[in-house]
Every structure is written in C-alpha cells, then in structure tokens.
Length: 304
Image (cartoon, rainbow, N blue to C red; front, side, top):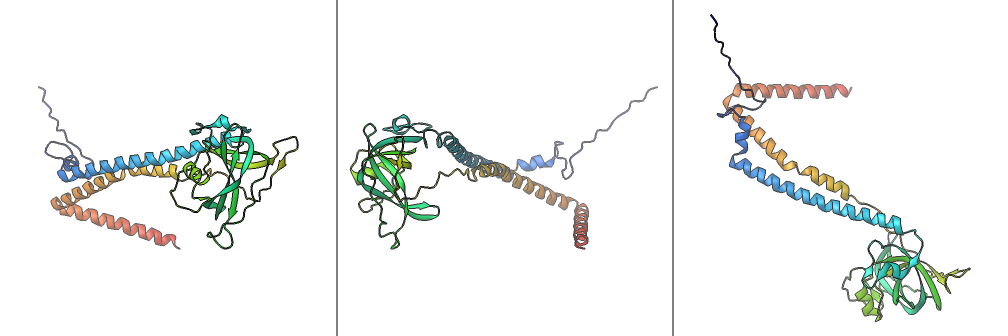
C-alpha cells in the first residue's frame, strides 16, 4: 500500500528581509509607502537634472574638440584668398582660423582694444584698417603692446602702420560680441563689428584677420617683412578643459539619490526588525563591534 508523501515548501528571503503577508519581501511594501515613494520621485528628479547637466558639459567638450579639429585642419594650411573663407555674414562654416593672404593699403589711424591679456600680462591689441581692391576694408589685428608705464589711463605709443601696398598673411576670425562700453575715441573693449564701425566710420568686411606676418610691397620674389614693433598674439587655446570628466561625474551622480533611498529603507527595516527581535539585533551589534575591534587591531599591528 502506497503512502502519499506531502512536501512542505519554504519561502526564502534574502538576508535582512522578512516575508510579508503576500509572500514578498517587506522591502517592496516599504518602498510603496508614501514617504519612500516621495523619496523615489525626488531621486528621479535629481537623476534627470544630473543627466542634463552631464549633457551640457559633454556638449562643451564636443565644442572644444570640434574647435581643435578645425585648428588642426586650417591653422598651418597654405594661405587662401580672403573671399574664399568669408563673406558679408562672417566666416564660412568650417573656415575659422584658415590662413589668408590679402593685399591693400593701411588707413593711417589704428584702434586700441583694451584689457587684452598676452602671456599673462594685460595690454592692448592694435587694429589696423586694410583697404583692399576686392574685399573692402578688412580689420587686421596687427599685434599686442603692454600698458604704458603710466598705467592704463595713458595709451602706449605705437608706430603708424606701414605706407604703400602691404600684403598680410594671417588667420581669419569672426567678430567678437560687443561689450557695450563707452570708451574714448580710438578705443574699443572688444573686436566687435558694431563698435569698430562706430569708431572708424568704415564699411567693414564680414570677418577680421589676426596677422601672422606683414610684407611691404606685396609678396615679391624677395619680400620684405614689416617690423611693426608689436608682439605677436598667443596661439589659440587648444585645451579641452575638464568638461568630459565633469560630464561623466554628473552621470555617475545620477544614482546617488536612489542610493540614499536604498540606505534609508534598509536602515528603517533594520530598526523595525530590532523592535520585533531585540536579541537578534543585539547579537548583530555585538558582531559588528567585534569586527570593528579586529579591524582596529590589524591596523595597530601594521604600525609595527
């Protein structure tokens, strides 16, 4: 005669969890309490904010990486005509920092751009107006001079631009944003088209040039470089900055809010379990203290 065998199935829970009435871990019931649902909502908002901050930093990194790629492509290339890389609207896409060659005659006056650093020292950038036959009047950033010994209130002496036909080799640049500052005649706060037009009254080309070299009487078989007495500007910044690292940090930080919620739920569950079973809680506390004591002892031994 056979005897029916009955098996008893035991529901197991991970350590630190208890079984609820529905057989599920109590941590799930804890998470749907209003307090912790609010915590999860805040953690989600925090994660979304971190994500977009990371995207913002990453876009800044990509902008600088694209700038460096443009520099690598254009900065040391052979000079091209000014009209090939610029028009009335500014520098053509992808043509920033292209080397350009153009010829013309300088206007006798020059313009001082105030508060311009060069190798950590503040001074002035000196702008000339090159009148060309086919490209209009082009602003040339001819170089830099430090402040005069009397300070920024006294303009440093600068030799007038060379007379006659001059050929300029340099890099094409878009105009800067106007700082809207009221300055004395012949001075501007930035290389902005509106400010320069107001100061000089000239109808300017859509982009300006950072001079690399000036040659008197054009680039003949034996060109004569012009010694302007001005210092060259610093090369363009190629630093990528910390933006890539900041983006990654923001994205890692997305999990922080959820980690706080998890720690809070875990602590609350332990407190509730301690109320139900004080002896087990006391035993865990003693074990934790013993582990801490052993760790301190190992540190003390390592000191010898």
